[in-house]
Image 1 (spheres, one colour):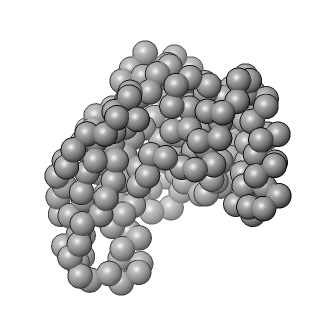
Image 2 (cartoon, helix red, strand yellow; image 1 turned 90 degrees about the vertical axis):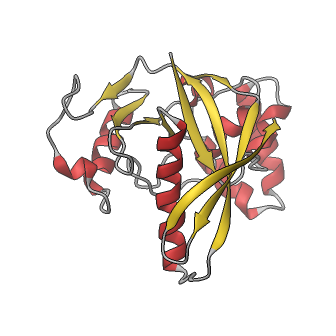
Length: 223
């Protein structure tokens, strides 16, 4: 077991919160399908959750936080966007740097040149990492494939992620690309999460008009 960190824009993804209303994981589709009658976003989530077997879902307290990435799919380092991945980091600072990179990339793409504060929330999990393949450089299964760590292009990493997921691996343990010396986890099975902390730290990322230049902690919220 390891303690890991994740930084998100909003810890309370509304559709994921529905999972807290059911007693059994397999009942979630029925509730989501009812929501999908009037909500097209929920209709997409119905297809996404079907990719996660009921026994692989996280059903503990604050399940909505863990399940959110598996309901709202999109391309990422180890997924082409056809299945969900929960990304976490070994320290809060690494998680902040990973999140800051993506926030900065978005703000640059939208030509946001005015300095501003970007709200984020830091979460802490306990993760069972025993079946996460260690591909860190020099690690137990270092595959010696530089494209896996390409800072821009994810094709090589996505191919590896798809193969390992199909082979039944629970996830991947890899070097952080955005924080030198840090490590990250890409988790394919939500059930690998053992516990979610009951607190979220509210952060402000500081956008100076061209890059995220720093951050500060605002307060702590109970979840």
